[in-house]
Image 1: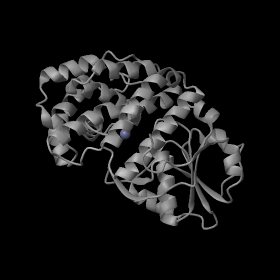
Image 2 (image 1 turned 45 degrees about the vertical axis):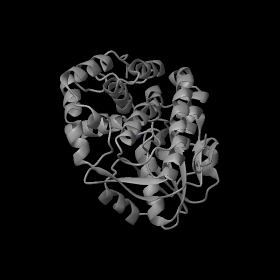
Image 3 (image 1 turned 180 degrees about the vertical axis):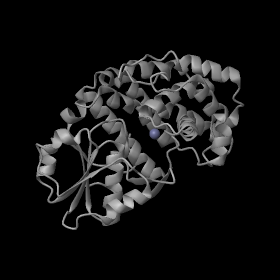
Length: 339
Ligand SMILES: [Zn+2]
């Protein structure tokens, strides 16, 4: 099932992409840039991404080289998002080269930045090409690719929350096609678990394709309710409370398992997906202790209301200590993963 207009994704070596696009500005993460730079046609300008605050990004725009025609994002979320902002502000062509599959930034048209620490979407830009260099992606640490399950598995808890909201007469109306897309992605995710764990070519292809379908559907719908609910809200609250930064998909994987327990929504199934994929979601591996977890869950209703987030399970039920304990006991049993 496809909803909206997914971006064109081509499998091509990074050397070939950068060899034929004209003078370009490379917006990169390093790794992998140092390992790539020596074997590609050199860029006119290199921007190392990381800081997503608007003031910083505006300085990147002001210093842009006038002779380049193309902005290339190469790396993970910050490189792809910074490249989007630079291309959007300058009107230059955009080529995206995701080097890990743990983020959807390369497959969505929304330009996301941070203003005073909070994510804001300021515009839209469509890349002329999204290039998948499979050997390059597979050379990244396995866990950064395995983390890609998070934003697909979140359909499990997101759809449940959306249904609750609709039944409560709150928020955007139910759409059967979006719900069916979420359900389909979950079935396909379960089938792809061995490939994702092995970081095989097919595992990388599955995640890239899932993200492009999710990105297109969110763009067409104007919201992301089928794949974003209380699991994301818990993660936002946790990061807000602690100031911690995590690999997004790892934090979301943990949060899906926890919130599926609060929802009484097949928590063992969600646990099995995370464990089977080899994803690093045990709270001890992420430096999250029992109190961190509990506080972000017990304060979640108030946080969601203060931030005007969508209706979810924490609005429908009163989260009590027993729920916190059961959710914690489950996530604490997730497999430990060596760095
Ligand atoms: Zn997400």
